Amino acid sequence: MRILLTNTFYYPNVVGGAEYSTKLLAEGLAKQKNEVAVYSVDSFEKELKKEEIEGVLVYRGTGGRFDAKLRFTKKGPVFKKFLNKFYELRNVKAEKEFERIIKEFKPDVIHTNNINGMSPLVWKCAKKNNIPCVHTIRDYWIVSPKNVLPKRNNFIELIYQKYFRKYSKYVDYVTAPSEFTLNSVLNLKYFDVKNSKHVNNSVDLDMDYTRKCISNRKNNNDEKVNFIFVGSLFENKGIFNLIKAFTSIKNDNISLSICGKGKLEEYVIESAKKDKRITYRGMLTKEELQNEWIKNDVLIVPSVWDEPFGRVVIEANQHGLPVIGSNKGGILEILEYTKTGITYQFDDIEELKKAIKYFSNRNNVKKYYDEIMEKLPEYSIEKQLKAYIYIYIYTCNCCKKIKEK
Figure (cartoon, helix red, strand yellow):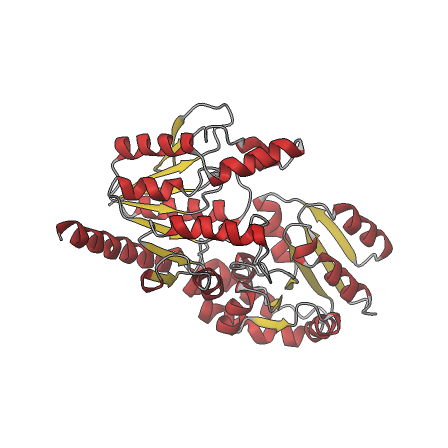
């Protein structure tokens, strides 16, 4: 098949999990002998560029007046951020650029991921060119300008949702990495419920590596248990709750390694000075992070917002770590299925403390290794590719029948 994917940014321009997911999917599809292209709007030099990365043709678009660099760095004047938000919603120049790419690449199917910057006009463009369109909901940007699930819609969010609801009718099939995320958006009357499915995010698994990690961990009888946090240092990631819970536990045989960067970096540094059991590692390279996974025993994911998926849970399992996770969004869903850790009420410090104390006993850590080996393959790239190929074929056939009628 000829498959055209979209995402606001594409490797090496990485903002979060969506970039990793899109790259993994694109390269996986290409390895299966499909012809794959990606359209992004991160040509920082403001001209359309074409390059090939790992067998994938990448069109780095200009995004018209959308300032990708401003979105990427999140730094700039308020009025420019406001204008950027406008172009995120309606970007006519990006639509025209996208249409030129469609004419050149001639895809059988279009698979949109994050469309910030290119706007929902790309959905309309796909329909106008009679190309079946699949969309994956990777965050909450299409339901709130704050990119969170609103507890109660205000006037602006109601208008915002009405706008996106209108364009969602141009999408032929919709997926999301968790049932929670999918249903949260479908319940707002977006897309076609009949043509929807939850498709797990994937990781590039090496089960031999995981088996080796777990074998080593089973032979570890050290009394000290090392906990790790990996993620952005923002309030919605639960950093305050994590440090409050950890520092209140009087146990010299535990440690906490914090990896990442964000607005709360200074708070983490100060906390590490006050409690010598806490170490701030900063933003790590892929190789450095792998070493951190190996040195630690249990991952803590204390998010206080509705994580669309929670890939870090699977990444931890991949290295043989069980997980303590809050009961928010996709985190709860993963841990309920895999049984590779325990969950707690996201805003209950005492429950989090109880979970940390439970895993402070290495014998309890070891109870989860067999479940990791059994359930981890569910998140392989092979399973994800099989699911998406089925959706692409199903959508193309349905659209073909509609055209024939």
